[in-house]
Amino acid sequence: MSATLLRVAWIHLKRDRVALALCFVLPVVFFSIFAAIFSGGGEGGARSIVVLLADEDDTPTSRRFAETLDDMGALRLSRGPAASESNPDPAPWKRESAHRAVRSGKAPVAVVLPEGFESTFGDFGGDRPAVDLLFDGANPVARATVDGLLQGAAMQAAPDLLIRRGLDQLDRFGGGLTDAQKRALDIFLPVVRGERSPSSVTGDPRDDEAENSGFGGLVPVRATEVGAEEDGRSMVAYYAASISVMFLLFSMVGAAGSILEEKERGTLERLLASRVSPGRILGANWIFYALLGVAQLSVMFAWGAAVFGLDLSSPQRLAGVAVMTVATSAAAAGFGLLMATHCTSRNQLQGVSTVLILVMSAVGGSMVPRFVMPPFMDQAALFTFNGWALDGYLKVLWYDDPSATLGASLVTIGPEVAVLAGLTLAFLGLARRAARRWDAA
Image (cartoon, rainbow, N blue to C red):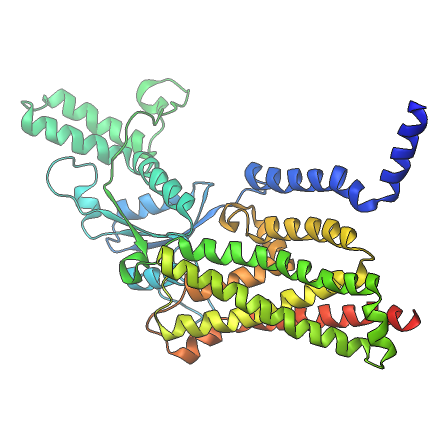
């Protein structure tokens, strides 16, 4: 009897494809997504941090420092904007242009080497001009990584200058070096700079390996969050957008499940018998769900503003949030109808939609910020609803330009709005095609 009951249970499970997917497919998919995110996606998958470099000192030492940063595998150094047809020979980054680029989200970090960098490099006494690290607050990982690598680059870039500075201070405050020590130093420093091989001095052909450890703070760094000093933006904006988009999808699917209930109760059949077309039924439901989504998102952002200080005070932000809310709600409502017309029961709808929404949310950035994802997953986010909706909201709430006009602010979210509009039409078209079976019934 037990064997028979086990066999019956297996038959029921095998017939329920959604249950099978939830048991075996979804855990594997989620494991693969998060393993790819936090392991770097395998060979060649790790994301290198784009760093804009503005060299205001422009001296041999600052150039050596920049070259050392460029050689670090974790960083991708940019000396200036990419060339274009309108600007084939762009000027190198300056403090102002690098600040604007980080503010608009084109790069997570900018490093500004100040004037006087060479003259005070390795000098631990007196005032030294700080290296400015301008960072995007939405990517704290990049800030911490670059801050640490700056110290490593300082140790590797000009060890000869560090030795010279230290010995100069020893010579000044410690009684001075002998003539023999000074001659030995003149021979040794070219070896440190890489201009002579160690064997030419010591006769030892082996290369020495420096242990650059236990020595930090070689260059003073002043980290500044770009945007926070101008409009006080906070991470509330980022999480308000990401969480709102994910739960909007769940709400729209749940609301669209009423179509399946009407079908089970016979209400849908009576509507069709009264010569109401499937297209009109879908259209009326879509309008209602879209308005419901607008209301849900409005409540979410109003709560964020009232309780957590989400800044919606400027006309540009209010208009941008309004446009993105309408476009996002319309597409989400279409997604709900698509799922409802392709499923045969509410249980099936809940199971299938849960799998799709969780996967899209994980890849699109609603669960894990996309700046920690490897590049190939960042590209994969462009194939998800969440990715486009989240990008649009972040352009409005995070990367907005306070000095831009209302029209210019709305133009920046044009690509996201266009994609969401296209998704709306695609979802509704596929839902209408699936609803043809209502006519046959």
